[in-house]
Length: 307
View 1 (cartoon, rainbow, N blue to C red):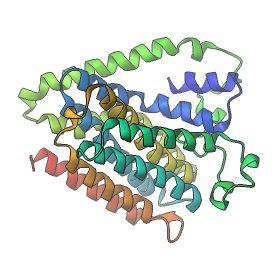
View 2 (spheres, one colour; view 1 turned 90 degrees about the vertical axis):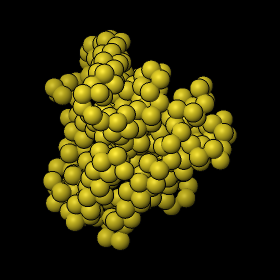
View 3 (tube, rainbow, N blue to C red; view 1 turned 180 degrees about the vertical axis):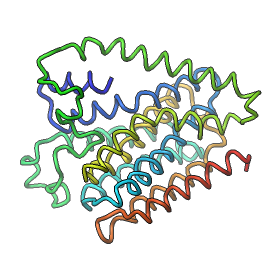
View 4 (cartoon, rainbow, N blue to C red; view 1 turned 135 degrees about the horizontal axis):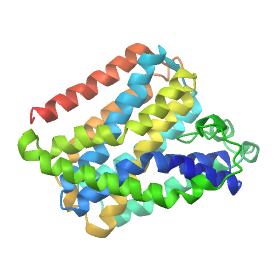
């Protein structure tokens, strides 16, 4: 699905930023589909668990594991601060909605325009940003999620074919159908696995649906593209919160998210650790990667233990 979307953007002449956004949506489609399907199936706790659990897994696997595998990754401060600022703003707004401090409409009015402006800034050619704030002027064009390049579109292609675009309906059906089967299989297995719905959502389904993003992150780590790696995790988490929590709440309210506020505490702590660790030396060390994974394992262990 990601290949078809990026091929469509290439054919239409989209900028690197918009191509990256399309690829991000494709890579996150299993997580979003699983979350929405669980909510519609009446298992709101599982749906919210997939969203927040996927975000926690993204930080641990995409950032923590990648730093360990690559022996540390270098990161540019400007893009990291921008990605983190937008991601934290969306996270805190979603948490306030879950806590009942803000309505879904008021949260959407804030975060959707913010996210749209962020995507537009990343999509603009770098030369257009020359007269803007120094932070924005230093942004690379391909900062968002999966910066598009021919080597990502395996097997190697010259982009002469529309086949991946034509196969998009099949890919979409496969993602939605696979997510439907996975969610209902997880719910059906609950009695004999002796796992709570919270564990099924925040640990099992969250990890499974995040595997495509993990593959891309490891590729970035091995090729020393730390900025793209951090952006992949931050932007993936933002997309999950918007598509799997904020937007569904506009139509069905926040009742399905009741009781999930504690998860946001873990998400905030792990996000701050992942962002602050590389800032002093512009590098995420292997030690920091171990610490990030350790925090996630504590979270997962407590969920399994029912704490």
